[in-house]
Length: 255
Image (cartoon, rainbow, N blue to C red):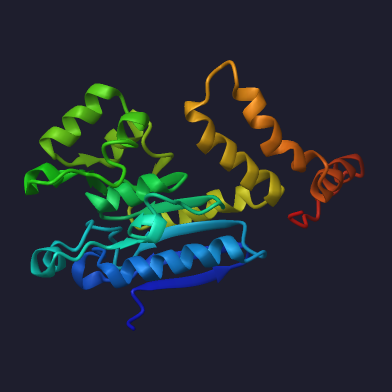
C-alpha cells in the first residue's frame, strides 16, 4: 500500500502528514485507514505527548476524494472514527493542525477535529459541500457553529464560500496566523510549550474540556471529579510539586 500518511517522530511530538499531493491530499478510503492507524500510534506511544497533523506539498486537505465517490460511491469512513479516521473519534492526546494552502470541506472538518489550529496567512478555508448537493456531515454542521458565531456558521455553510486565515482568527476558529510556509514550525513551537507540562495532566485536561461542553451547571463538578481524581494521586503530581520546591525542571513519567 502506498504511503498516503507519513509519520515522523521528533522528540515527544508525532508529525502526521497527509501525503496525496497529486490530489491536494483528498481523503480516499486507504488514506483514512492509514490516518486512523497513525492516530492509534499517537495514543499508544508512551514517548509521545503531542501530535501535529499537516499536509504535503504546502496544502492541508481538499476534503473527500469526490472522484472516488463519483466512480464507485466510496466513502472514506473507518469504524467508529468516522470520516478520514478522525472526525467522529479524535485521539486522546492533544493534536494540532498545521495548515498551509487549502482546508476545504472534509479538510476543514478534519482540522476542527484537532484541538488547536495554526494556519499560514495564505491558507484558505471553507465548507463548500452545498455547492455539490451534499452537506458537511462530519463536523461542519456540528463543530463550526460551536467555534464561530451562529450567523457566520450559517452563512459559511449555506453559501459554501471560502474564507481567509485572517477571518478564521477573528472568529476564534484558529489559534494563530503565521507567515506562509511556517505553519508546521508554528505548530512545533506550540507543541514544545505543551510538552513541558505533565503528560497525564495534559491528556486529562483535554478530555474534560472536550467532554464538558454540554455538561449542566448542576452536575459539572460531579462529572469532572472522577475524571481528574487520578491526576492528584499520580507520580507526576508529586514530581511537579517536588520539582517546584527544589527549583528544578520536572522529570515526567506520564503516570
